[in-house]
Length: 115
Picture 1 (cartoon, rainbow, N blue to C red):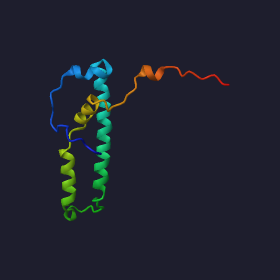
Picture 2: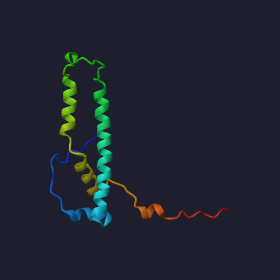
Picture 3: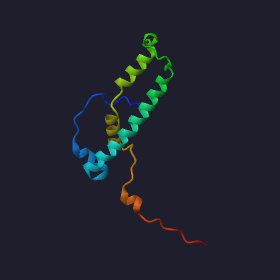
Picture 4: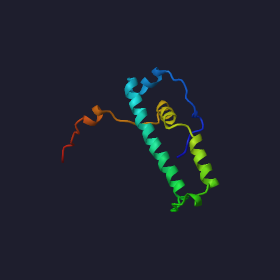
């Protein structure tokens, strides 16, 4: 997953009125951001597990387990990434998140007349 460079890895104070531009409702915006953060989190976890699976061993003996430098560097890289919530907030504020409301999904589909 490509992470934008402009996203802060630490917490940033936000103006809550910025979240109402897309939806008109702060709570709806927060719910959308939360769902997007969960999606990002799952994707990052899958990536990390995929990369760490290359180093997996089937040895049960603790004496034979050793630290792998590459494995440590991969883990540190993922620890330094911005949190999924920060990424989701930035995506939402930049208009990169698409969403549908229940009202849009409940609209009846109008069939075209057949010829």
